[in-house]
Length: 459
Picture 1 (tube, rainbow, N blue to C red):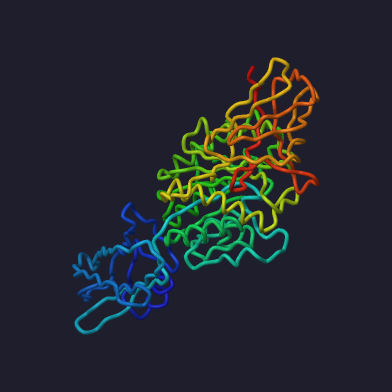
Picture 2: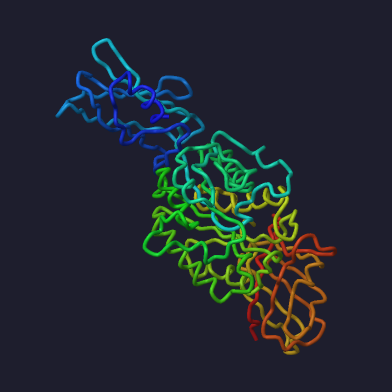
């Protein structure tokens, strides 16, 4: 790294003060042309050196040489060198040299530098998504092209001081380079499909209600708060102004507090837009019935938020395998990654894979007869092909105790037969926790589960 090189050499060589420079393992955010500007600037503090130049290699092969004459004022000479690197699965290295006649001296170095895209993850334990069940599988997705910055710790001073880049890690929690199992898998899927490196910063902390995720008023970068720790890491990495998407999984710890959830999430969403001005999309995983007992009303709020926040997309966690009632086995987190990556690929990379990649999302519920013994459920995507396991019938709830006894499915429409006339004004679809015997799901042709809901029944 540059700073280490300078400290080692400054006793023997001219003092060079770097203002901007690459460091080992750094990812520079790419621009619209898929290029990134690497700048090396500062001052030489010892007169007599005539030129400064940067040698850049790409995978160890000479790529570019940039040079500048030095002009001294008051014994100091300023320099500013720059070159473009392409976002690709190739690594760049840099050597900064001073020249005096035939004599040269290296004064800085950085290796394994790339350009690419930046994503953030925030939430509680299923966003941390570490190897809580001890399977030892998550890091098989590690890649030199999936990186992270800093430490995902809850300790303020460690978070603020760690300014190193790491290969992203999916096994650990709240540690150096920790991004979680599905975060790492998401990064690997994106790299493999686009050939563009990615950096993922995960700031999630388990068992945290949404109120703890809000920024400190007047100081969003306060590292005593979760919001400030992630923002400070993004700023220290030089990527805060280039984040493409935020992915959010949280809500279990808010239980039945549906009334306040929308307000707090909107506050958080607005803060993200302020502090990450390049944000193109926000993705939310709707939480699942289980630990914390998040009410169906809270989950309905999550489902509905996308109708009010134009950058937001909501993905289901129903029909995800490996749920232990709270967290997921690795197979479940793999499914998390597959679902969210398809949306990112469509929204941000122009992928042509668009059929059945959104979670089935209810549009309306209405009675089909005056006797109120049958309900028609119409889902939003007219081209979806839905499937309903009969075990899912027990996940529907009417307020008067009338039950659902049968269902038929045609394209994006489901007809529910009731055990008798109902006076209920609402229909809820709760889903269920874990692997319930005889359980089932509403899914689309790709196996993505429907978003849970609680809505008014139209006459």
